[in-house]
Image (cartoon, rainbow, N blue to C red):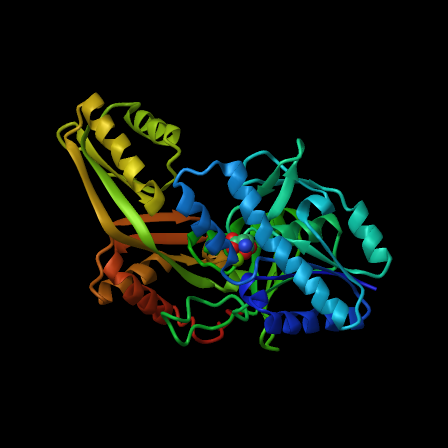
Length: 411
Ligand code: ASP
Ligand code: MG
C-alpha cells in the first residue's frame, strides 16, 4: 500500500460538478490500494473575491485579519469535497491547516511552514479515511491563523508529501503539464515529459505560473518527485525530478517571459567605491525586490546604473532613486515602464557553448533590441521592450526548435 498526496487547484474545485470529477480521481487512487491525502485550494475565484471584499473596507488591511478572511475559502472547499466523497460512499474527513498541525512562522500573508505534526493525519489515514486538507494555511506557535502567499496550496501539498514520506506528490490543475513555453503565445509549444527541480524553479520564478516557486524549492530540498497533471484529461503529465538520463543533452528546456518589468536608470553616478552599495542598501531598506542590474562602463568619472523591478515596487523604487540622486549628486533618473523579460532555461547550458549567441541571433533576426542581459548557470534573461515580448518568445522557441522532441547528442 502506498501513500499519495494529491492537490487540486481552485479551477478543479470551482463547482460541485468539477468536485465530482476530483472525487473520481481520488477514488481511483484509493481503489489502487493507496492511502490518499488530498489538498485543495479555494473554489474558483473565491480568494480573489475575498480580497475584493476586504478592499471595500480598506486598502491597508491588517494582515492578521486578511488571513482570517482568506483561510475561510479553503475551509469551504475541503468540507464540500468531503461531503461529495461521503455521498459516494467513501470515508472522508476534512481538516483545516490548524487542525492538521501545520505550524508556520508569524509572517501573515507570506508565512512559511516550519513544522507539520503528522500524528493526527496518520491516525485518520489508519482509520481508513481519505483526509482532505485545506491548502494555503497554517497556525503560528501562538495560535494565529496564517496563509502562505498566493498559490500556496502547492506548497502545502509538497510539505505534506515530505512530512509523510509519501510515495508520490501529484499536482492536478487545469493544464496537463509543464510546456516549453506558454501555448497561448506559441501554439505548438510542447509538453515536457520531465524537467528538473532546478529548471522548474527558474521557470516558476521567471513567470511561468504552473507551480508556486516555494513548492518547487521545498520539493527539491526534500527530493519529493512531483507530477503535474490535468484534472480534466487522462493525458500523462510532467514529472519534476532531481535528475534524469540525458538531461545534460537538453540545452534549453523552456522559454519564460514576464511582461511586467519596470526599468529605472540612474544617470551619471560618481564612479567611486561604495556607490552601488549605498544605492542598493537603500532599495533593500524600502523592501523593493530588484531583478536585473546593469552598470555601464564609466566615462568622465561617471557611470549609469540601471535595474528592473516588478510593478508593485516601481513607485517605491523610483522614490528611492530620486532621493539617491539628490543625496549623492548623480545627474538624474530615467524610467521605462514598458519593458519585459524573456528567459531561456536549461541544465544543459552548463556543458554547452554558444547558447547565448543563438538566443541573441534569434532576436537580431527579428530586429528586437536587447536592453539588458543577465545570466546564471542554467538561465539567460534579456530585458526588451514590452511590445516585443511575444515575438521574442516565438522567435527563440523556433530557433531552438523546442516544438520538436530534442535530438540527443551521442555520448
Ligand atoms: N486559494 C489560494 C489562492 O488563490 C491558494 C491557492 O490557490 O493555492 O492563492
Ligand atoms: Mg487559487
